[in-house]
Amino acid sequence: MTYNIALLKGDGIGPEIVDSATRVLEAVGKKYGHVFNFTPYLIGGSAIDATGMPLPEETVKGCLASDSVLLGAVGGPKWDTLPGNQRPEKALLGIRAAMELFTNLRPAKLYPALKGECPLREDIVENGFDIMIVRELTGGIYFGERGMRQGQYGEEAYDTECYSRMEIERIAKVAYETARKRRGNLISIDKANVLESSRLWRKIVHEMEKDYPDVVCKDMLVDNAAMQLVRNPAQFDVIVTSNMFGDILSDEASQITGSIGMLPSASLGNTSRGLYEPIHGSAPDIAGKNIANPIATILSGAMMLLYSFDLKAESDAIVNAVDKVLAAGYRTADLAHGGEYLTTTEITDKIIENI
Image 1 (tube, rainbow, N blue to C red):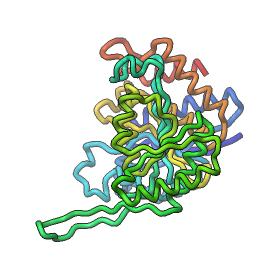
Image 2: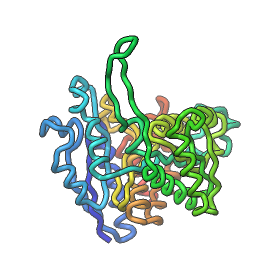
Image 3: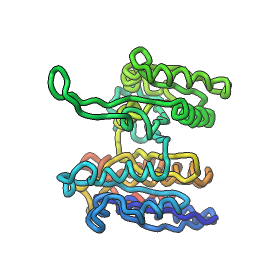
């Protein structure tokens, strides 16, 4: 099979980590008989420098014409003084909207070899954990009506949380089907004791239970969920939640894995084409030094193979290779704590050797 992949390398360490992921994908293609054609496009600060805008029209067209998209990272202090609508980060919302991506999948897995990196007590993470967070991506308070006004006590600002039945049904469908492919446990997180939008969310999620008799669905209030993630993360299989709650909880979950440099993500819509990216930032302080951890981006490529191309064996080959490299004791600079480490290029070479 031949697949056309748009590369959005972006800023900072973005080009380095995307190059590592493409090398791994090429190795997988060679082993399994696939061809991956990579076409780079500008996004973020690099796009601002070249074109004056964070998301050029050529980039949007290229992504929409591709089979899927791999993104590095955007942003950096060089562009921090620009107005909000002209900053590199604006491109992320723009490309997600253009590709009509409403689901964000963020796995949070504690690798056995990295248990010592987890900030939680040893007895809590003794058996590890493997969580998939399904976050609604295009609705809720981030996209609701907002504004400024004069009130009784001076200036007021407001943001509105709003969800429609359609938005809730489509994200819940993704969550149920994801749970069905994993361990069959789904926890829907909301704030139904206070918010009307959460009450509708809870109602609709449970209306859909009848279509998934093989999935056990329970509710959890978001404040309790934040506590349970650090008290007993192993209880979670699949989590589904709103845009804002998902944003916060997925960042919390990333920290209990021990390294943000290990965590991939996928943004999906109604087509097989998705946007895959590591959850970390552009790390401009280490850009160009060949010490960035590329594993999150490499694993994002593995998610692309699974969710966009339905190549499970190929995806597993990458995941298993990463497991073997970590189990053998190889570490990148962010995991070495001042000890010996492999460069970005070297850790990529080791992963390729194990595919």
